[in-house]
Amino acid sequence: MNYEIILYYKYVPIENPEMLVKTQKELCEKLGLKGRILIATEGINGTLEGTKDAINVYCRDFLTDSRFLDINIKRSVGDGNAFPKLKVKFRSEIVSASLGEDDVKPWETTGKYLSADELNLWIEEGREFTIVDMRNDYEYKIGHFENSIDMGMKNFRDLPNAISKLEPLKDKPIIPVCTGGVRCEKASGYLIKKGFKDVYQLHNGIVTYIEKFPNKAFKGKLYVFDNRIAMDFDTPDNHTVVGKCDLCQSSTEHYVNCKNTSCNAHFLVCELCETEQGIFCSDNCKIIVAKAALV
Image (cartoon, rainbow, N blue to C red; front, top):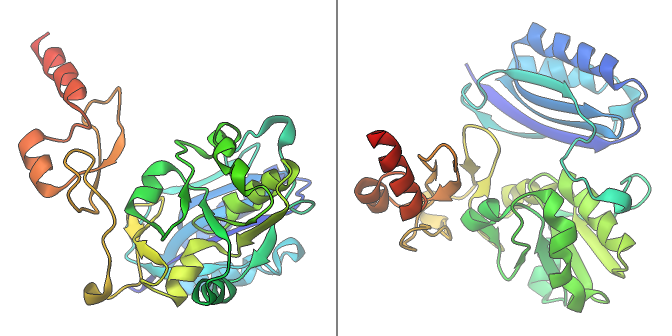
């Protein structure tokens, strides 16, 4: 069968999120879809995989809801194995932010949308602006825009502690970017609340840009939160590897989790280091596991 993966989100007030959880779960189960949908009073955020026919039926039904008529649904090729099961959950937020008293409602405050075409034009024209990557540090390592700022965050909720590195850009054009756009809706609004004067955001995220402009300003692969781990639209002879082994700094795009279960760090490792050193992010983790085996 031909499989397809869809990615979508929308910040919109939802009065009865529990009911939407129920109807979405029933629809996905009926169509045999797998993936994850998060629903909150602030909106919906979903990633699903299924056969093309099932996905088409889902989208037709989903888009009949007046709250989601203008939602952008991003599609990519699947293989039926991107997700182990279906999860449809109610959450307090559709992306973990916890920005405290400065939390934002994107339908009230958000950056100016910049399309993939507009961003690419700005890059080609050499306009003055700075791309700020709002993803986690391990996402940035495998692929990112050239000359972009890595915020160095372990989690999006680290933004309030990381924002100080952007202070010199308070009066300059900045463009927050993230995978599909959902984090940047809040990140750009947060920056505006913190006094940044000229804030944009890449509309519909990095995935839309690399689909239209493979291996141009964005180099490497795009980290995704499913069993694919990373994706790109480059051809093998037109691909730039930017990922570096966390152990020896040689080129790689291979992610593993540290074998020390109390650590479980997600890191890049080359084939040689994985063979010689095993799947450990550090010598300390290797020693911990070795000692535990002797007990």
